[in-house]
Image 1 (tube, one colour):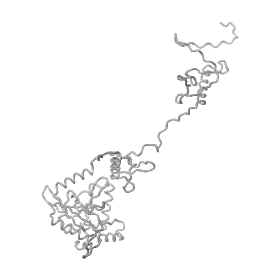
Image 2 (cartoon, helix red, strand yellow; image 1 turned 90 degrees about the vertical axis):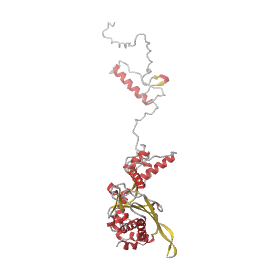
Image 3 (cartoon, helix red, strand yellow; image 1 turned 120 degrees about the vertical axis):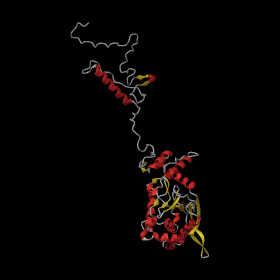
Image 4 (cartoon, helix red, strand yellow; image 1 turned 30 degrees about the horizontal axis):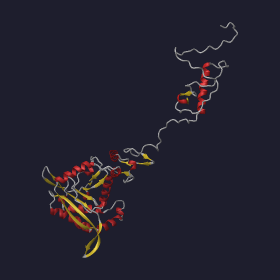
Length: 407
């Protein structure tokens, strides 16, 4: 009890809030840091530091607390200042570097191109592929960014993906690769099976000296009229076939099973088998028999480009009357082609090679190819098929013969 009113009231002692029966720790010495506070001792002999910055191996230093009676100081402000000072001291004295916040992965370290996303850039390179090819890549697990494109303009084709899948499978030691058969390829397979087991096929062969045809191709390629179109031996073979159809119209026909009739077509919708990323397609040139040689060249070029780009429409493949397949572009001499469903015949053109040939009783080196004609024996008998094939050979051996057949 203070009876002196002028004396300064002493600071009340802190209340003891510890539960009954618990031990009260002794007050720390002047300048020391209480256990559990930042800069104080922690279990295991370490020093408490900021959470997330690792243990501090050095001894934390702390300035003495300000006196409670210091001017302008209150118990709460003193405690806050001391805590802030301890944080600053701990950060300044700790040797453990502060960790930067996590950042997202950069574009360079991002995963490689996802198959199926057109135009995506991978390492500065844009991968181009059509939707069916991207889907095939997803089905086969092929990374499009790792596929070497062979299509025009750097486009990855179906063949590129299949080749990559086969190479990856071989590299991984796989013994089999399964490719789903659907879409155009499935329809082609069904049509070929139906044709092979419905129409009785007969195939005839002839070897032809096409030296003069090759010379004519070279002349036409330099002619101003044909400057903007592709001129190839296939063009002259197509023209020879059209002229032979005029003399042998029975090969340009179809079989009507329901009516049990042969339907002879008085027009030529000339089909050309084309290998595309979607599979084998047989688009046809409508009314090819009414076209000039220049018009036919342009039509064949457009047909081929459209097929390879996958833009062939169903109407382009409908109503064909007779077909040519050119296996010579693959270096194959000839083959026994299967008739396109709904038609009576198909002509196969083989590779043109330099071969020994007898000319006027003398041995010479000539340009020689093989032609193979498969025809439906229900519509075309052996005589008609042989005559038709011989007429084509005559035109290719001597293109001037076309003037006689055109009458």
